[in-house]
Image (cartoon, rainbow, N blue to C red; front, side, top):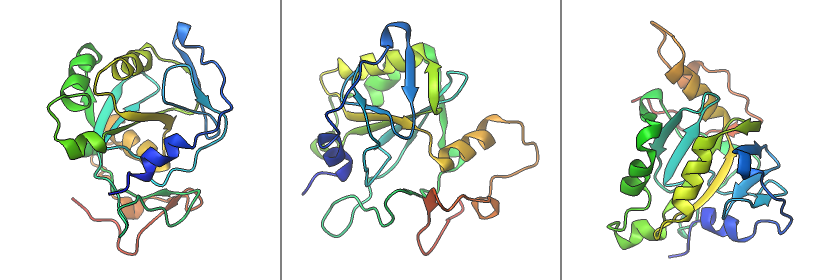
Length: 207
């Protein structure tokens, strides 16, 4: 089986790199500047991912709170990730209840159990990918440094990227964290920016 294009995209990242100022936990993540491969390496141009999401996904919000969710890999008939509309992110039917808040005090143990676990079956190991979504711009995050250090020094480290939050993640995160008493997240009622996201013929499926 061919590897996910998530994996393939990491292999064709531009050679233009700059040094990340990780010594003071300061990062710059934008649509045109992502991180991948190891601490201190930046992609100079936005890589074309056929699947922006990993098997495991972290969201780090503006308060340095971390959330976790999982996503099954997306395949086409030839077992590759699919991207029907390049430049847009696919709607993944994410809901606020899918986001699990992870206490920063146990983040290392959480990663050991869920992301770098040596007891994973061979297929899971082969497809072990991690996407870390952050606010766009320059920000300070000792938590991100801690996560990157943990995964890059682990024996069973995943392929990983750090990228800006997608539109869907941003909206779902707001419903997760803001006081919206009596307001239920319904993706049918969201005014989506269709220049940034696309939907399959049948969408979305309510939980």
